[in-house]
Image 1 (cartoon, one colour):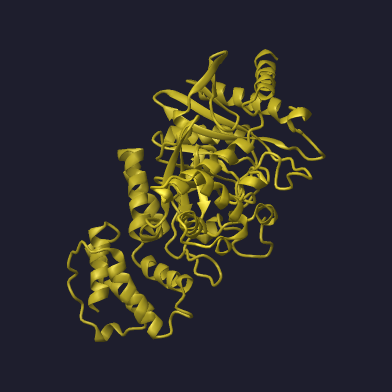
Image 2 (cartoon, one colour):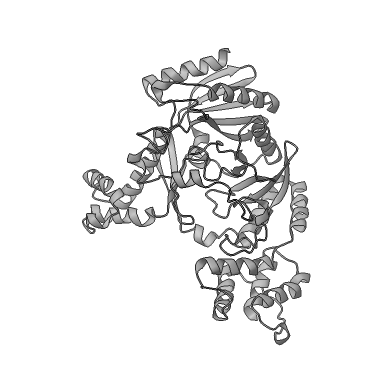
Length: 489
């Protein structure tokens, strides 16, 4: 089939297979399509610059016509597509060897190789990701960013809190290593999924790229075993060990508690990538010295400190001591409740290596709830949840708001209401008060841009809701008392 030959040529052009693999992978793809190889003429693949979709879509259409794709839905087409692309992917052992060969050249060469493979195999669906909206807003904290994510459904905080290990399922969660090459109904398509083995703090981990790519080279580092998220001294050693091995990347961890801990707490994992974030350019309010460790208090919507040192062991010990003091800190006047049978204080650590200096950026978190704030006292408050109701995880902490896909329709709808082309009752009820508010202050020109800017500003306000030490007189006074206690005890 000419389309199969073209797909094979694409794989050769993009370094996925070698010419000696042509007959094998051609037969494998024809078998998936239930085409008789004996009736096919092996054609010499011709190089082409056309996109992968040009080759894949006709093959998926053929599979649907034959009934090989159950419902021809996006999910079922993605599953069959992953099976096709798996025929063009290296086996895990071959991938590991090739990755290590690239790493011998440089760490960046290794991650470039793996990232290109993830994109070229369509594990990362760049054609869909291009549809995501990206925008920014200038604030007192610098320029913060937001993106409307069309790839994943919006989750309710209570649903996230309840979603732990799926007992009796295989694999137990979406991060488990057993997803490599998995082809199972009602599970995400992962037949073309691959991971790399790593050792962090002399412990077994795996490295992979997120299929959703919220930022450049969005990587996930996963512990070998299915164990719950837990922050400890080991965590900080692992993060710094990673940036030692991959100094062009950052690596951070969500807090291991509900509400402030991201969306998957049932499996120990970290997120990293080859990217800078607004938090990296945050203004320093004050600098403290703790032995050989420099500590910067950042001007940021949340309460954030950055620890810097040239000795990784010293930095780990200082951060660990700091976390223990914060874990037991209690200030009822600010709503900071350290324990109510279970602990509530936690941190979000983010590691980088800049030259010969290690950096650990720490956001202070607290997951206590109240009658007024059932989703979390230091979570997005109800008056801001029309923009983002989900947990504020590691990525949001760094200043990138991952906003729900529904806004892709709702923000233009609000724009039309402001310009008189849409009735208020057509707008979702949760958005109507905000739409009325915006109409009062909207400009006469560039209304859509104005609405996007205001949505980003609401995200910034959500981050401010999560500040345990707000930028108020009382908040600043309490923070100064807390940091002095750490520095002097």
